Length: 60
Image 1 (cartoon, rainbow, N blue to C red):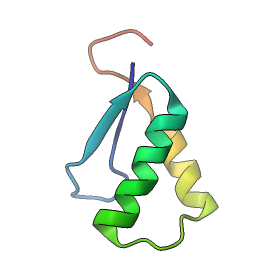
Image 2: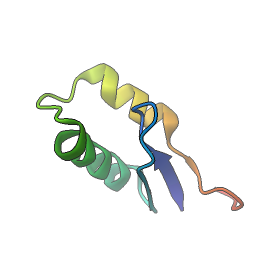
Image 3: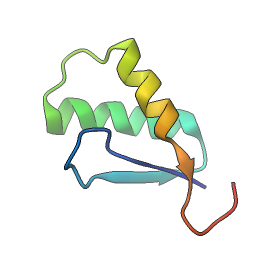
Protein backbone atom coordinates (compact mmCIF):
# COMPACT_ATOMS: atom_id res chain seq x y z
CA UNK A 1 0.00 0.00 0.00
CA UNK A 2 1.23 3.50 -0.88
CA UNK A 3 0.08 6.91 0.29
CA UNK A 4 0.19 10.53 -0.71
CA UNK A 5 -0.41 13.70 1.25
CA UNK A 6 -1.62 16.74 -0.70
CA UNK A 7 1.16 18.71 -2.38
CA UNK A 8 -0.48 22.03 -1.43
CA UNK A 9 1.09 23.38 1.78
CA UNK A 10 -1.31 23.35 4.72
CA UNK A 11 -3.81 20.96 3.13
CA UNK A 12 -4.52 17.91 5.30
CA UNK A 13 -5.94 15.70 2.50
CA UNK A 14 -4.33 12.33 1.89
CA UNK A 15 -5.06 9.06 0.12
CA UNK A 16 -3.87 5.44 0.09
CA UNK A 17 -4.03 2.77 -2.59
CA UNK A 18 -2.13 -0.19 -3.97
CA UNK A 19 -1.35 1.46 -7.31
CA UNK A 20 0.38 4.73 -8.09
CA UNK A 21 -1.99 5.28 -11.02
CA UNK A 22 -5.02 5.39 -8.70
CA UNK A 23 -3.23 7.68 -6.26
CA UNK A 24 -2.38 10.04 -9.13
CA UNK A 25 -5.99 9.95 -10.36
CA UNK A 26 -7.29 10.75 -6.88
CA UNK A 27 -4.73 13.51 -6.37
CA UNK A 28 -5.55 15.25 -9.65
CA UNK A 29 -9.27 15.00 -8.85
CA UNK A 30 -8.57 16.54 -5.43
CA UNK A 31 -6.54 19.39 -6.99
CA UNK A 32 -9.42 20.17 -9.36
CA UNK A 33 -12.26 19.94 -6.82
CA UNK A 34 -10.63 21.38 -3.70
CA UNK A 35 -7.95 23.72 -4.99
CA UNK A 36 -9.66 24.86 -8.20
CA UNK A 37 -6.93 23.71 -10.57
CA UNK A 38 -8.36 23.57 -14.09
CA UNK A 39 -5.15 22.40 -15.74
CA UNK A 40 -2.91 19.75 -14.19
CA UNK A 41 0.55 20.63 -15.46
CA UNK A 42 3.45 18.25 -16.00
CA UNK A 43 5.40 19.66 -13.04
CA UNK A 44 2.38 19.01 -10.80
CA UNK A 45 2.30 15.38 -11.91
CA UNK A 46 6.05 15.12 -11.32
CA UNK A 47 5.59 16.51 -7.80
CA UNK A 48 2.74 14.11 -7.08
CA UNK A 49 4.78 11.13 -8.29
CA UNK A 50 7.82 12.21 -6.27
CA UNK A 51 5.73 12.43 -3.08
CA UNK A 52 4.08 9.00 -3.25
CA UNK A 53 5.51 7.00 -0.35
CA UNK A 54 5.05 3.55 1.18
CA UNK A 55 2.30 3.68 3.78
CA UNK A 56 3.77 4.77 7.11
CA UNK A 57 4.65 1.86 9.33
CA UNK A 58 4.52 -0.65 6.49
CA UNK A 59 6.98 -1.96 3.94
CA UNK A 60 6.53 -1.11 0.25
